[in-house]
Image (spheres, rainbow, N blue to C red):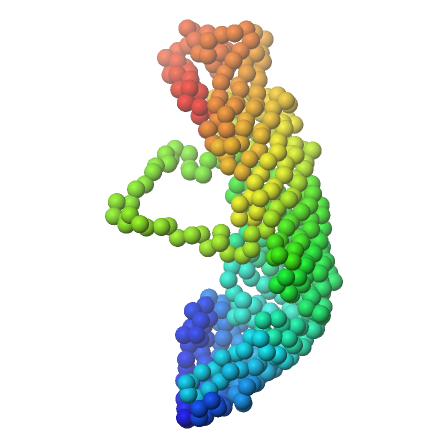
Length: 451
């Protein structure tokens, strides 16, 4: 059997839909029966991850030589930003001409050398991709041994001025610096540090086993590090956390973190005045199953055992609330199914009801839970003048708060509201004021006092 093929301007997207760039090359195969030899000489132009900047594309050569039960691969890649990457590998193969077959044997020994120096982002996008992004100057050199099923790398790696982001969790690290040694199937992280871009940072060190059934332990020290930063909440924390992986593959995150400051926006997800509506798709098939969220099913579910504490500086604002709370909480469960428990207590604060300020009672509490329908409210806010003490009780759940109005001395709700809003009896109101009072009473009766 003899096969000669010429590749001309073939898109890398044919091989992997997440890649772009082109390849030219010559492929020659010769053999008979169980014997097969061959050569591949390929030129890569602009090889990169799909959507990556074309200026970061990698150019270079990839040569492969098939001889007997081995295939030798030599590659040299570079780009205009100074990145250089090299790999010399000898992989065990099982090849035959009839039937035509070339397969890598994952159980037999391999050997090789890898080297990279320069901006790692183009190489990361090409080889890893996905929701995670890594950038920065990398210097990597090492030797490979073992098998594909059990690779044994030996070498060193450093990363400077790095940036890491994880689209699934929203984690963003800046100024990443890392020093690591690879030996005896273990990645020893001598030191890693990073900042959050807002004045906080973290440091870490640990031992990560490259064996599937190996034990790993990694410790992180956080100082004012921003854990959450989105449209609903911002929170920074200080403390220590440990990430452990046991021989059975389970990963667990434990730690005690002090919340330095948290700002929570108590805002409805829909704009004010917009009524949420249930939508039914008329022509949808009866057996249709909505697609699973990719980020929810990607990655390993990490077991959580993290305590969160704050004596104060948990700020809740919006929907009439302006309060400062303390926190004593625990996050259990897993990263895919977290379980929040604990309590938040009122330190100070105000509640704006119908345009009037009510001061929170410091005995108020919020019993925390993962689901808003399980978050229990027990809050009281009062307003006092020379003739009346009016109190608003907020109970129920975060999903469906229950609001009631009482007074000392005891008066009907319309009289209490009239005194609070206008300073006089309901019987003395003008028609416009009476309409305003009726609107406030309707809002209270509907349990919408927080809107």
